Image (cartoon, rainbow, N blue to C red; front, top):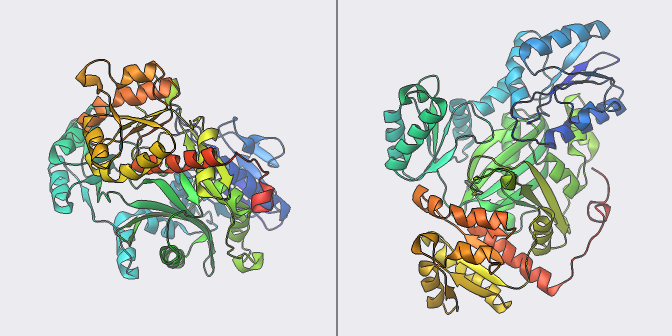
Amino acid sequence: VLLFFFFLLLGPPPILPLSSSSAASVVYKRREFDYCCCHACFALTEAGYETIMVNCNPETVSTDYDTSDRLYFEPLTAEDVLEIIRTEQSNGKLKGVIVQFGGQTPLKLASALEEAGVPILGTSPDAIDLAEDRDRFKALIDKLGLRQAESGIAHSPAEARAVAETIGYPVMIRPSYVLGGRAMEIVRDAGELDRYVARLSATLDRPSELVVSERRPLLIDRYLSDAIEVDVDCIADGKDTFIAGIMEHIEEAGIHSGDSACALPPHSLDAETIAELERQTRELALALNVVGLMNVQFAIKDGKVYILEVNPRASRTVPFVAKVIGIPIARIAAQVMAGRPLASFNLKQRKLDHIGVKEAVFPFARFVGVDPILGPEMRSTGEVMGLDRDFAMAFGKSQIASGQALPTSGTVFVSVKDSDKDRIVAPVRDLVEMGFRIVATRGTKRHLEQHGIPCDLVNKVLEGRPHVVDAMKNGEISIVFNTTEGARALADSKDIRRTALLNHIPYYTTLAGAIAVTKAIKALQSDTLKVAPLQSYAGGPA
């Protein structure tokens, strides 16, 4: 169940915050927004406000008896929320509503609430719309002199083909009005585009001309191949901005940000790039007049910084950032939205002497036949964190916490797409030096041997037995590196990924993941795993 929250503040004294949630899905159950909601509620209570929680999901901490003064179980619709407001106004004058702590759904109610005369605290509905509306946001980016990947909007299948041809393949394509990257795909040619529209039509049980229309356009962006994706979380009050965390994704851009592992602080970005990310984030916060939290997603390709999207709200990374830096950013943001100046918190940027790695947790083993490949559509149901003084050990801890028992010896199966063959050489060479045996499919084996790396041949499933799936089932494979592209290659390698999952074999479907886990295995071989309390890293609870 997805959790969505927002707050109402009523006053003058007492000022009453109200939080609301709505269950929008029966597949995912995320607690990041529950965390934000609770901490904001606690902060406002400490500041002297009464708190009211509205939540249709009882399986949350925010519905505990001691989280708020009053609790409603109601759906998150404008009609229900306005009725609650009318009921609660008898207890005090309405000061305003905060819509930032529950993801995308509360933001969509901001305009309706404002039109009904309910004040919105924090970032204004117009600024929210500016960040959400593609045309308005593009105009803002152009005005600020920042960079976005080429994009277009298609209102028919024919227009989709024309837009994609103009931008140039590969493109990222998705329907409008979806959450969590649902139905988003990377499309590499016109044939894949036609098949995408056909699948969308079959899923919705509508003809293609209704699936892609004026009311339901397709959003098409140039896909930034092999780009590094970065998340930035910040707090602003309309004048000052505090950069809370810059997170470098392990997987390349194109993997949904909720599914990608990420490191805080960045483990490979140079100081100049980090400074540019900070500058652009501050510029965006000021231009949007953000009051409260903001998340910006960037992509870095060939040394250039591209803006992917801006979310003027709490992101799912807020709890992770708070734990790593030791600053309760959700609590601070709530007080900023209630009117306290950001400068009064005396927040200082400090260089961390540790690194945190967030890793996603997936439910693939519980769903028969599901392909555990990562892509632009979000599939994770939770997350874990690894903390250490260096990236390799922190990444290793995050893998262990997510259920991947990393081997320090054994056999590695390697089969990668052509564009990854050159860059897989270095990590595979490191594994050989660590004592691992390498087995590979024909094309990958040939490439590795050309670079002086000894490896044995193993058949693909389609090439006949004994093949790689047999070896995995027989316990002969310790770890899997398997990257693919294109619908045919993905289908051909599905059995490999599924067998790895069912047999608890660590598997990595991106080059970046393979490189990171190789570093982690090397760290685990050379040093013992050390456990320390969170406070020894961040210095205090968050």
